[in-house]
Image (spheres, helix red, strand yellow):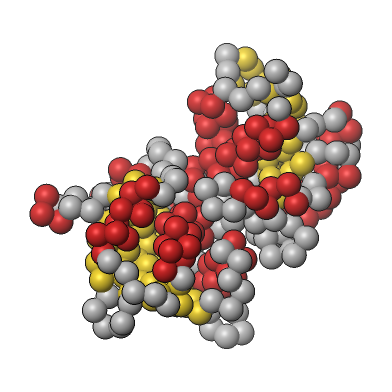
Length: 339
Ligand code: NAP
């Protein structure tokens, strides 16, 4: 079997560390790994698959040694500079940042939804925003069957989605609450305490009063589902949960549907687990989704205010399916297609 050379950029971050965990679980045919970070973490040791690796500083010459694939999770500025360099040296980059997602030349891929886009890459494939990935895994089979007319997204997003500093802010808030004598630590990520608050503000505000996270969900859903004119609105909210994003998704369809049939379609959908049994108090929870790659769907009920609509509660691990695992599944597909 052919073996490959893989680089992980941003290996010391929240997504990068989870990528290493997922790679250890998957045992892909990779013969050489290299782990990159900024100067700050260069020199640190990473224990991976029974070996010690030294983290290396990412430089313009890092890709001279001929990598087949690279997973980038190091922010948009790093991706914008280094991904084209890697691609020019024959490496295919799967990029977790938002730098290339809306570039018409760059496929935006969720393997359960649009794997056919993978071969259209010119050296860079974009991994969608975490909140978009879990939504489209649930929505694609419903769009195929009933044709979506309109979507209303309301999200409840975990602090891990804001990287290491987001986690620190929630930990600080908890510490300050349980120990009032303790001198409160400064916030390092959010503009207000995330502990005991819901912040309707993820990423920057735009001219039209939406946030960039909301705009990402709208535009990325349209691109992935190949429905450029789909009517979508979104409110994205950061909540005091450590990991896994929850989403309320209200969908209106062109065609009528039978609720039992719709639930069965979701049960059969790739990457979806239906947890929907109100009689036994069963619905998807962030704590249950954490550590898994599936998208959990529940609270499936007809929206009685429109002719053909449904409400869904969709939960997934934002660091795994929303970032690391999705990127590695893309690499896995490329390896399968190359064997
Ligand atoms: P994070 O915990 O802050 O980690 C950032 C990583 O990037 C660290 O390894 C850091 O290295 C590295 N880095 C920063 N500047 C660099 C540079 N100039 N050259 C090389 N490496 C550099 O952030 P994160 O949450 O893992 O997010 C990483 C990326 O994934 C972001 O683009 C984010 O938007 C995206 N993403 C995150 C999520 C999520 O749920 N967290 C979901 C989807 C996508 P040092 O250790 O040296 O600082």
